[in-house]
Length: 212
Image 1: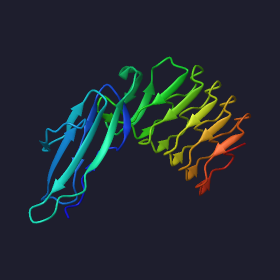
Image 2: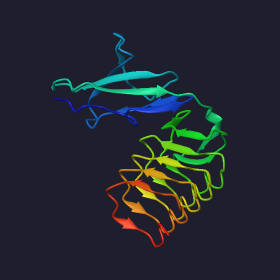
Image 3: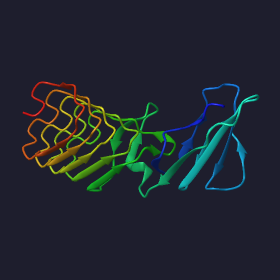
Image 4: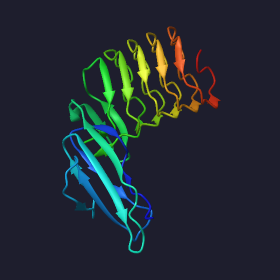
């Protein structure tokens, strides 16, 4: 059979618009897709954008081989202002400009995927109390949330790396959920005096004074 195609980012949420890329490990295979259970079959030639919640189904077919399995992903548009999130070309969330207390960081903003959170992206923000990350985000860099004194809950299921001082001084932080975390930097949770729930089971490296 022809190898199944791969849809960019997988099931995820976005603000503004979403860039859809479909690839196949066989360079000679043709890729076809449908949107939202439509009977209309499109040949895939290049990335395209969607601006509403959509389910994309795709399969690949190479001459002389059986059709691949059909793969499907749902891309969910969520409420929010794209201007609240400054994302660079490398997929780094550079800055958050919003004024919400509960922040859901999406997978994609106007076609740019968010893969990591930069140093100081949220630092010293005293408004946020809760933050959750979509499954594309794998790294929270040093000092990202340093001094967010009212932050209480963090959900980051796919984050693997937490940088030095990432949550240092988050004195209201009660819980952190991140089941994929493998590395925690020095002072990452220093002075998080209320932290009582830390859900992760894959940590391999813990930096000095990470939980001082």
